[in-house]
Amino acid sequence: MTIEVKEGRYFAAQWFVHGLERDFLAAVYQDAGEDTWHLVYRFRYYAKGSTPHDGRDEKSWYHVKAVPDGREKKKSEAEMRRELKEKVVESVDTMCRMLVDKGFGDSCEKLHIESDDPERVSEIIIQRSYSHVAPSVFGGGEVGEA
Image (spheres, rainbow, N blue to C red):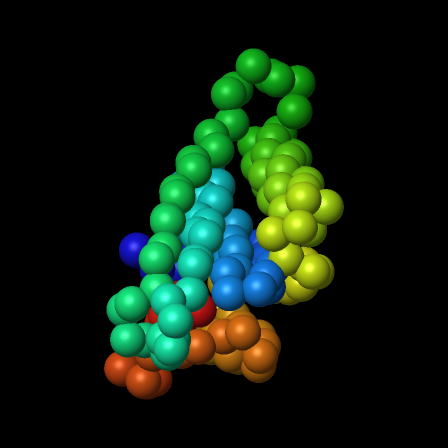
């Protein structure tokens, strides 16, 4: 699994918690034409002497889907989607605070992306020190997982 940047995918934010020989990465996005917000996250535990793309690190990936429940009939669809996005983002903010508070990592970096332009999203992510983009993704508009 990976966090894929592609045409028609709107990224709200990305988070990274760096710990000693471990890290946490998460992103919240929505695909065009969907009401569903996706939270994709992973925990990574570094293998001794590993490099970002040698496949030796232990990774646990998770994918959570949040869908408007439709019970709030008085609100517009756009308002329900916005509120759902805010709830998902707030949940990840809380998760990152808990990881830092419990000693998993020393700090959480949050990128406010708010874009569906794959080039812009890739540009924002690639600039981060923790972003290890697989060489094969250049030119394809996709960013590999860190």
